[in-house]
Image (tube, rainbow, N blue to C red):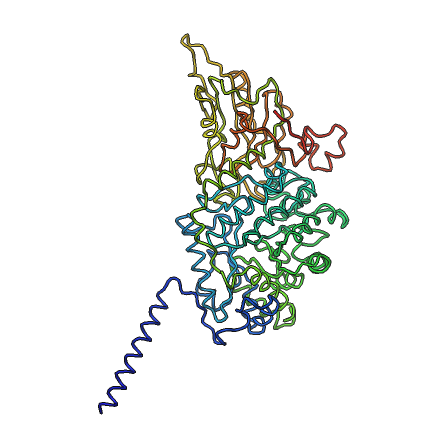
Length: 628
């Protein structure tokens, strides 16, 4: 009796302790150990084994359903987190504006952490790869360092700077748990009316190749993998050929023979692969009468075959849907054409069930599924996701740090292009007593950052932390200089003791474009707005020397108003560090930027081949940039 009671008590104690351990394990927010039905130490989890051996071991353990799950990328607001593990979802993303609430680096990290935890607690514990469009800094995150858009970085002609920027952006991404950047854009833009012109480094294939490669090396040196995009020819679409909404160039048709396509548009991809790019995003555009997502020749034969690409391809946002109005046919065609991962982005159940059905019907082979998943797993192993799936939250203190912002300020300085400097307007003298400043772009973080900043289309206002151009002017101006700002250029109350209008030594007019992104920025006549011309005219009456600072995502047609100001500066979309503009205006640093696009005289010189055919030539040629 006593002996039996002893064993009952011991069993109850053991059961109680086991239950406590289980409860503590389930309650812990840092639980990461995957629940597996197979051996606890399978070869694929051994980091000492070669990547290919790990890939094959894991692939052999996967069900068909889990394989298709790995080919599925879902927008984060559309995923049911409880589906991540059971369906083996391979990737999540934040699109433009896809941020947590509140939007700060710490909440980003926690959001990604929780999603990743769901994946790690799946049967096989395959980590997610989380992606985001960090196209000019970690630009969805409030408080991150926002660099000039690629068009500004192209004007720097400085690959060493691009490599540094890649590293800093990568560190700020990893701080929020994100290892995959949908950047850089490798487009060689032929028509600057395109709403994505500012996402390009320039009009010259060699320059785009050099700068993209440098940026990629910087990103991947800190463990962030890029998407070289958009394969291929997106910068060569023809006006009026888009089939999407009111777009005119974006997602249009590239009308070029294969020799031209290769020489102008494909070359940067070879440079990207040579720099280590392991993911390539397919373009919305078309070539040869076919959507790029259906181009088996270019994806399978050229990219994966001829160019030896062994990473994986990913669609653009619902890009495969555009192949056909029949969803089944579209998915079959896209996957067989070589698209390995589908940015669904919403109805992932539909995509998974469609692919499973296509395999069952024999329209997609299991061998093709295995090839796609093998490529995805290879990159995940190469990234070290199985060993370090959560990024590095010790870097959170560096997001938007003084050191990172100083690098961005340097990038702004080097991106500025001096187009005209008459009447020794620049540099502004430190002895100036009065400076007038006008234009909404002068004191607006959202306007100087442009699209792809916090929101997809960007927006005006104090949308994130930073220094406006006006604040930079006020900080850099001499201690005896008075800076007066009027957005609308109204300085009527600036009079002397006799009531006569006061004329400032310098008038700075900061004007340009409102934020836009992608096809919503396609514009037929990229000219300086009439109300902005009025601001310049008003300033001409109130200042001895007038300086125009253009904040824009492309060259604007300014020929007719060029003589209205003494100096013209192309500042592009400088990002959060507006003081970099003031640094150069006041001569603390020299102008070193040079155009990465030829600046047309008029609309007849757009697109680029029309400019090349015009004997008069551009207003400012590619590579142009005055020195003070």
